[in-house]
Amino acid sequence: MKDLTSVGPCSFSAESLSSSVCVDGRNSAFQSTSAVMGSRFDGRYGDPSSFRERKTDFGGGGSYGSGSSHGRGGSSYGGGRGGDGGGYGGGGGYGGGSKKDLDSISLPKQEFENLTPFEKNFYVEHPAVSALSEDEVVAYRRRREITVEGRTVPKPVRTFEEASFPDYVLHEVLKAGFTEPTAIQAQGWPMALKGRDLVGLAETGSGKTLAYLLPAIVHVNAQPYLAPGDGPIVLVLAPTRELAVQIQQEATKFGASSKIKNTCIYGGAPKGPQIRDLNKGVEIVIATPGRLIDMLEGRHTNLRRVTYLVLDEADRMLDMGFEPQIRKIVSQIRPDRQTLYWSATWPKDVEFLARQFLVDPYKVTIGSQDLKANHAIEQIVEVVSEYEKYPKLIKLLESIMDGSRLLIFLETKRGCDQVTRQLRMDGWPALSIHGDKSQAERDWVLAEFKAGKSPIMTATDVAARGLDVKDIKCVINYDFPGSCEDYVHRIGRTGRAGAKGTAYTFFTAANAKHAKELLSILSEAGQVINPQLASMVSNSRGGGGFRDHRGRGGFGRGFGGPTQSGSNMIPLGGPRWGR
Image (cartoon, rainbow, N blue to C red; front, side, top):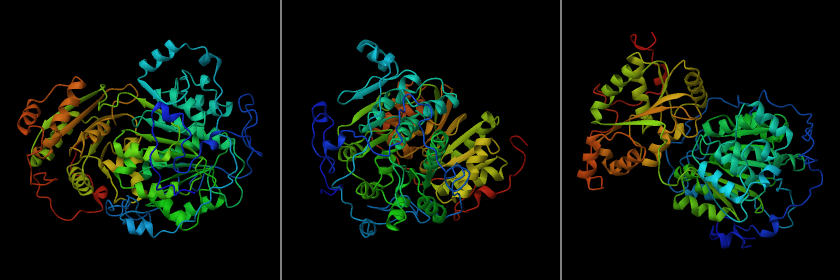
């Protein structure tokens, strides 16, 4: 059997999508579906009661619900990126480790001969979808900005009923109050339900979580029940614990009718409750790569039953150095699995990994692959020096603060603490979230922010990745990010679901190398261009020759001591907003 980590790439062209080339040991012979004895899939399209009757308890405790194992843990990101093999796992996750450390981990050798066939094609095209002409399909995809690639791509669905979900799934969707599928759901559901591998390119907030979770629930209900010692049927890998917890909350909500159990495995929280959940047996595991490696090494679970694999925000996992962990994990999963690979961007490294893990995939892209910002967001860029940032932040808060939620991005954890500390001393209700905060504190900060009790939150990119907080009035880029892709992602926290939003950005001479691309993004969105920014583009000649050696965090206040861990506990100073 070929080593899953050492195979060559496969092509995504139309010609190669129809071939039966074996990739990562996955032979096309496994693509056919077979009836499985003991399946729960009993007339799922006509019987509203076609879900399992479980005697085990569900929800309420452990990590099956939204209150999952949130104990205090160690550093969430293990002291930074870990070179070749280090991810951002922490508190017992796999952060800061070297490639040698990862190679030294002993996982069971898996044999993929004589695999039991499993069912994975559940799609029944609705008559209304079948009746759509090709011109109507093209017009719908154009209107929703859907681009598709692959062999025999199914038509999109326009309503939840057209997706032909079992009644127990449709009931949960309608109960949630959704009016129509998002673009990624409209095209992604038929693709996923057909059992084929899928590449989905869509931004956070596009509805992609339900695009893979609802088919996952149908998939689980079609498989034999878990036996003692079995691992999960569905595995979802996510880059951060915040995103993992949010995915779990959705899995809990929409899996309730089926009584499907799930757990969330991530670093920065005690292992004990997570191990107990795994020992009880759960059909769905949502995990960060580092902590899952720990659990596999400790023989607390196995991936022999995984037939539905999801890699969510694959681009961010690669950015965070998780590729070695992902390869190690995938080597434990049967090669005829169904794999769904989600990313907001499609750089070469993300594409290369997809070519190795996927067979005969569909590919769906929502929106243009060109870097664009949401046109519902007003973008205001101010060219400043480092020393001007904090005074200008205060002036900005004084003019816009009305109790709405504001999200302030900084590049470093130290910067988050310093800005938060000073804001609180100055009377502004700010809290920070970053990797050195315990999981319990991070959950508390998010709860305070969502409830509006502390409407200002400072965050690093990694800590905020995947956060789903509604009604954020504006985003403030106190520090410009390391790339314009991250800039677009940051400001996308506001202006969601048809709402308007505003993004303020402090841009310094040290950021000059990004000026040209930022100017292009602003121009495409029809924004007012700051003449100083335009001048910076002309002067820099497309490169970043300017350097500002004064460093970050110079608020004109004489900061510079070691970072305090208790910035969120600084008492609010004199009366400012809402006092």
